[in-house]
Length: 244
Ligand SMILES: NC(=O)c1ccc[n+]([C@@H]2O[C@H](COP(=O)([O-])OP(=O)(O)OC[C@H]3O[C@@H](n4cnc5c(N)ncnc54)[C@H](O)[C@@H]3O)[C@@H](O)[C@H]2O)c1
Figure (tube, rainbow, N blue to C red):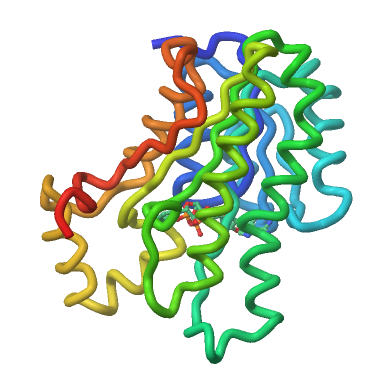
């Protein structure tokens, strides 16, 4: 399929996991892309028009991304905000530093990059924003307060963007991955068989998710086929949340 021939995309956090799989999927379907990650070395093998080593929380990051999109692609049609971290502590023990770090990467940076991208997406005429939320955009987990708040924030931010940008032909949606084997989770799943088995069996399809599962959903929401879907949170969890 070449759904993305000539379509210009940005993917953040593309060095590993869901971001990398998404970048590879979009390129395989004909897209030109700009990628970034704070861990720059793995980006070189993706085949992007430009690969930026940057921290998305850097105040200059949104402008650097938009400049790269303008310089290397002549504009922007699809923005995928994927970069994120998972870190937790019970609220009683949650430091200001950890709170700000999680919210800063998972939510503040997404807000700033979306804001910076709006003029280019308006110029595109078929703009797409796909933010990476989580099952924790609608659910909560003890000990994961900052992460849960950040991903609930992704839902509120994206739904607001959908309303504000719809009149300009731009859709804004978020995916809600379940338990996916990536850089965030790989070591935990390998070390903790009970945790791995819990999530494997909780999924109706009886397996953990792979980055390609999420990349496929992101590509759908970024495609022309999803033109009438906006403000939507798409669960991609193998059915894990269908039972309590
Ligand atoms: N793995 C899961 O089970 C799961 C479930 C739900 C949601 N998610 C979300 O998926 C997204 C991608 O995570 P993943 O699971 O693929 O993990 P990952 O660690 O494999 O990939 C995340 C990438 O983001 C980069 N990154 C992190 N902080 C950054 C920063 N400040 N600036 C630039 N780059 C940064 C990392 O270097 C890494 O390459 C995250 O938003 C995460 O919250 C993951």
